[in-house]
Figure 1 (cartoon, one colour):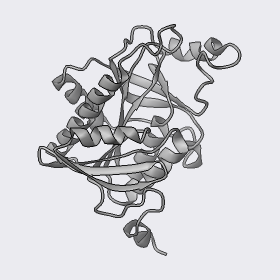
Figure 2: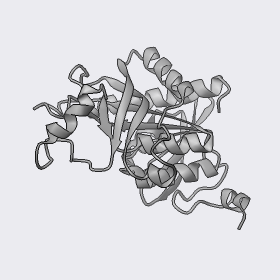
Figure 3: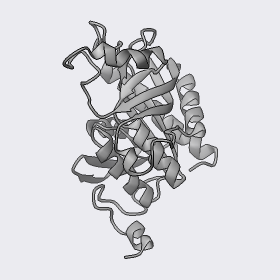
Length: 253
């Protein structure tokens, strides 16, 4: 089977073929967030559902945008991103949540990642750790412009992607703050579980990728979950759609 055959056939996990997705695809981890995306579009059609991968493609103000859930963590996300690229995705925007670690970041604010610490191991399967996990500056710019349009407070900076969801949180055994403090001291904004693999795969394959995250209180505070998650996730998805529109208007779709 040739490379061209692989790219023209229906992909095994996402269950889609070329033409099923727009050039820009928003990728939440949580499948239910795809329904939020669909509710914000002028029109949206469910294209595929297989395993954790649910996809809607639709239009907003005449511009096509897609949304595919990828599940939690780098391995399923990497599979989804690879297959989306094979069927024509040119811009990948992660829309997710995170564990904030900087005390000045407040609930209802957002993080636009400029890069990610490669604390996971999926991306090592692709290339050595010397390769950086960096967001595409054009997607970063589109996300900034979207947040500013909707008056959404945001922070720019580096996040840490890692595999052990609870290891650097109050639910961990042992002194989790001893593990967490170096990242706080170095100015890392938050912990999450997918972005570095997305950035590495996108960079290696010549497409654009970025991340926007919804924030609660810092994970080491008593009110870490004191946040209107549903309302803020809705705002984040809205910003992701707006960023997709801006990318197309700028000739990047």
